[in-house]
Length: 560
Image 1: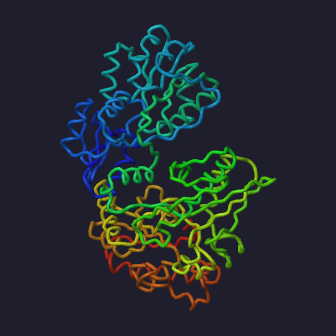
Image 2 (image 1 turned 30 degrees about the vertical axis):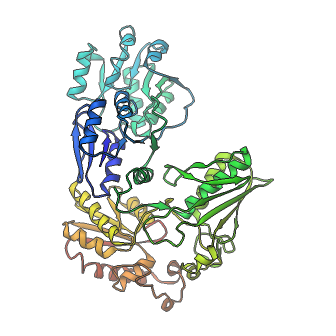
Image 3 (image 1 turned 135 degrees about the horizontal axis):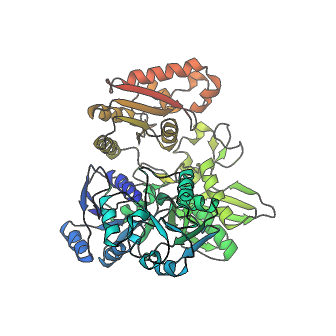
């Protein structure tokens, strides 16, 4: 069992991640005002002391705590730390120090150092008591949530109600913040270092553009031994490590993520004469992931590929990066042993270049530029890559002599076994439980992004290769509308009646169209061909989703 402390945007994210397991977990908030819908989770509310947490963990066999509470919930953080339980801290994203902002270490320093004729405090109702010595002597407005519990705190602290402002029903835009600040006539604001999900950037930018003084109280520090994560992928990985049997399927790392970690470690050893055993780097969605590396020689580092529960020929292989500094500012990627070379167009990589896909290249370039402006040669090698190549489909897409370095998210989600089909069902059950009447299906991240770009409010679930199983479950649960995003290669298989598109089950017969790769069809076939493919896909999908609205949308690259 797992216990989440939430009440925040991060708490909702933690719910979404843990719901994927299909197992019971607990979600705790101090009050009951946050509206969350749970399928497998159990909601509990009320403040918990250290002893309460210890007792609850024993009684419910809690294996770890996910602390997703507000960064300024200092009392709760202390109680969680004193409970002695393993803790995963789901942290917010925080901007770097903002120029022009006056940072304060705590509320006492705020009372002593703020200089203002009229202060607007955007620090929350709980800080009225902490700032009492200030507002008793200086004109101060507080903006709070218009809730009974907040107003009770105002009265308890004898703060004048005519000095209150209330948050609107939705998060204010920067222009709305500026208008509010002008109307109240303040010359300074005070806020917390609350991170992106707390609207920090919007408040600060609005005030600075108006020429106001901006005071920010820094977030309290947390225990260093806590495991800190900042997104859904890293949270799931941390739970996998602490509670290995919680998720029925394990996620892994892409070859691109491994190559990025190895490249950063190799460059650190060359620039700083450091030989790290672990490095942190950014995933494409901005999450920070830490990976163990083997780095003993200047400019060279390796990572052992961690695999998911998906069949994976690269499981356990060693991916090595060797870097050399150049005399210019160019970053070049060189072919190492076991990495293939591109011989055909259409992969987004120039012919003759090593088969390192665009997203891994971008990840490595980003990390390199965090460390140096100099030119760098990056040579990626894969142990036994030539032998592994014969077990892949690389030869059919024009990659020869080795495997490709791939990955669009940095994380491999398991797609190819019975447990994954069960996980689709669980995600659909959650969507149904929270009131969704329509659902989107995509095979992976590219398809998800394309569907979300077209319909931002559409909840999208990955079907991997199991479009038929996904549709069956959606029909059984009574979804009224389904949108399927599908790449042309899988669409050709589906149009021929194959509701499982896995390459081990069926291969698309592309020879009749005179092409080797499905993506080449976009260049050689007329629009009527794609219309017919969509029609045939919808016809076969109707065999398992007979009722409700059904749309099949072909995805070209990352667009519909």
